[in-house]
Structure formats: structure tokens, C-alpha cells
Length: 224
View 1 (cartoon, rainbow, N blue to C red):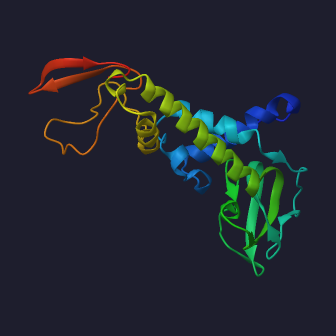
View 2 (view 1 turned 120 degrees about the vertical axis):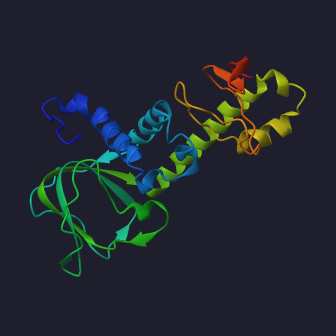
């Protein structure tokens, strides 16, 4: 996303924002180190869903020119900043915090999304920059929605699993809260014979071969 084109601005906004958020998820940016999103850290489809959901809540700032200040050290802070293009340096008490500037796909002041605080440093534009902001309260609301949606999807899946039909809805609700989704690529192992039996697996989609002493003994599909 370092070469995003601006000539079709009206059509680029949504895709540009999504590209930034997807880049942050791919690089494990602090913004996304939350269980409901990181459960899908190896699932490209889930990461894209998370990016699409969060990107729609970012608001674009006016374009910053060289020398412009995005925010000042010590000011009250409630927004996280994501950089689409340009270069930005950070300074504390007038001194540069890093020799490396922040560029496309980077975020500024993630801690703001966790709690009310003041800006730790000043962010100043080194090259014409386009920046998007996300409010703390909006972020929390989005995560709550994401978590509720995920829980509902998992509960719906468990309701369709034949071997769990005798379980009460209360029990299935508790199970849904404990589920961790994992994506396993073709020909990779879910677990190996002899591994500790400390987890129970249900196939959500795809097909799994069960082997004993390297001999196939069964096949599992969705719901097994």
C-alpha cells in the first residue's frame, strides 16, 4: 500500500482504508492484539472481514503538508491515527524518538484506544501525508459488535453439530465462548498420534483424514 493512487479519490477511500487495516493485522499491530481478531491470525478470510469492519469507521483528516503537526505532545487524546501515505516523525521534548519515520501502513499512538490519556509525543509531517483517525469509543463499540457476531456464529455452528444435539442451549452457549478457531492448510497436521489429548476439535469446513500408524481409519467433514 505504499503506492496508493489518489487520482480516483472518491472510489479509493474504502479500499485504501481497508488496505491499511489489513496491513496492520498482517504485521500484528497493537490495534489488533485482541482475542476476537487474533483467534483468526492465520485465516486470511477472517482478517479481511475484520479489516472491512474496522475500516468503515475511520475518518479522513485533511491532507498534511511538510511541517504540519498531526498532534502535539501533552494534548488530550482520543483518536488513533493510521497513515495511508506520506512520512511522519515523532518527537518528545523536541528530540526525535526514532531515526526511522512512520510511513504508509503504520499507526500512531495505539495506546489511546485502550484508555484516556495524553499524547506521549508530537507527530510532525515530513512528506505530504494522508491520515485516517479512529475514535476510542467507536473502536470499543466495533470490537463489541465483532465479538457478539463471532459468538452468534459459533453458537449457530454448534447447534448444527450432530454429536452435540443432546446439549442444552446454556451449555452450548458456554462452549461457544470457549471455542478457538484455527485454520490448517492442506496436507498439514491438526494434531499427531501421541500428542497430549488436551483439546477437542470440530471440523468447521474442509475435510480431515484420521490416521493411525499412518493408515487411514476415518474422514471428517463439516460438523464432525
